[in-house]
Image (cartoon, rainbow over all chains, first blue to last red; front, side):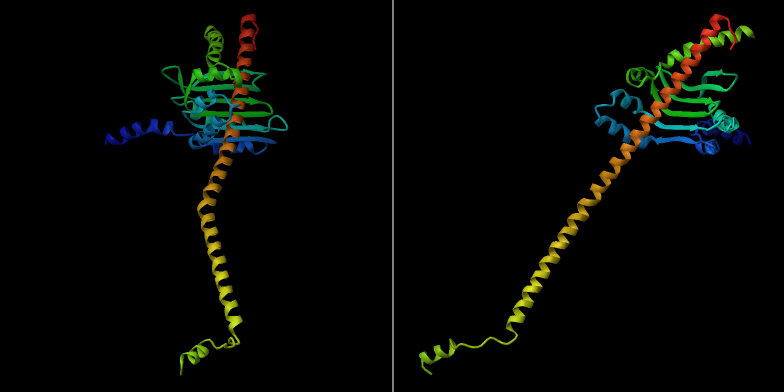
Length: 186
Length: 102
């Protein structure tokens, strides 16, 4: 009798950790004029990493950064007019990212709620991340980035020189004053 | 018959059979055909051994190039969006220190 709920309780975190089904975002593409869809699984990333190694233009940092990644998903949609996508279509993704091990570190809104930036991470010990996700909404543009796998923060820092990726520590530090302000209001 | 007669008989000139030329040419043609066939089979064998791996290497190279292109696009978009977020947070922090509401 006790076994069933126990099994369910044990299985639930496993379900929660399973990958997100990006097909649920397909309705967002319906009215898009331009689309960028990138889906790279571990095999493709390995392939790309081998190729990057043979190209002197590419940095060794990129190779190191993608070495432990499991997957990269990017969905970028551009629309001719504002209001051509429904934010509710992001519901399943937000629900997925609201579960552990994901943690929202940035939730920024500008332009009377028309420009939204959300950054999620999977914190790991030892200055590492288990993944990073970005949701960016603008009136005529919607971007979703989800990177799964172990990311070394130092590798991201190294990319600053040639890729211009900001230091994620800076993002977290910048978030703090807003949090404090919210706490004061409460 | 004496020896001289036997020799004359043995070395007597005889006309070639009427189909001799045709037979020789036919045998030459068969040999030529066999050689062409052997060469074709060897070429086919070489092609069967070497072309599929070469095609596979080419296909994998194409795939890797495409994966690399997609990876760089993904990293570029990630970079842009994180920089955008950073800029938004900086603006929010500035507004916060200036005492303005967003």
